[in-house]
Image (tube, rainbow, N blue to C red; front, side):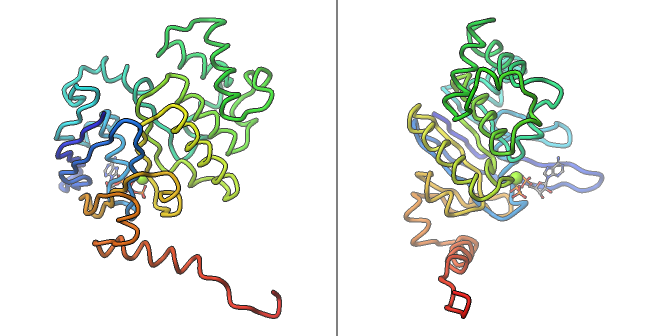
Length: 268
Ligand SMILES: Nc1ncnc2c1ncn2[C@@H]1O[C@H](COP(=O)(O)OP(=O)(O)OP(=O)(O)O)[C@@H](O)[C@H]1O
Ligand SMILES: [Mg+2]
């Protein structure tokens, strides 16, 4: 489905250059969830954005091949890439509030995406919009279409983002820390929704996270990045139980530390 070959991203600054992604290669098979984990600044978001050349160039330069449905996206025309982005490849980012346009209603934004990427128009596009809002768990979807983003909570905004991503029937969903900005209880709901959508539509997902619990719940395989390189890649169980790289060991140690049962105190 997706094959990434020796992908590199370099940011050129004044007199300095950062190799944010360094010859990263991986594949995502049909219906598979691949998680990318790694410390802050290791290049996860740069990988996600580079896949459809969604980086500002300059300062970024991208090299390598990204084969998606048989075509190398790195050689695709700007028009072809625009059609792929938000169409066959959909993104969901960390901050739903910044991904939604504050001055447009949910209807305007959702219908626009549907009309741009699917054959549905007008009333039909609106019907599809309502259907997707219902599927992601928005109550009174028809009425809520007229609302503006700020009238929704963070969790609801992320549901709208998922509806928007799914309404174009993508074959690959790229989710970059989709729950990090949300309250913990909401995180669980959004992850469950993401997992249900993935299963129901046999989506390929690239899930970026630094939370191993999240990864364990939805990913099939996990890649570990460190300083721009993919240092480990394998089935979730293998990486979590026999980590090879020091960073992976550290992540796992941190997780078990956080989930230690509390010692009994007089308050318990
Ligand atoms: N537009 C840019 N210009 C210059 N350098 C950049 C740019 N975007 C990212 N970088 C640098 O590239 C490196 C990788 O950043 P990236 O955002 O891809 O990491 P990340 O793994 O997603 O981090 P986080 O977990 O904090 O989101 C970092 O050193 C960052 O400072
Ligand atoms: Mg990031």
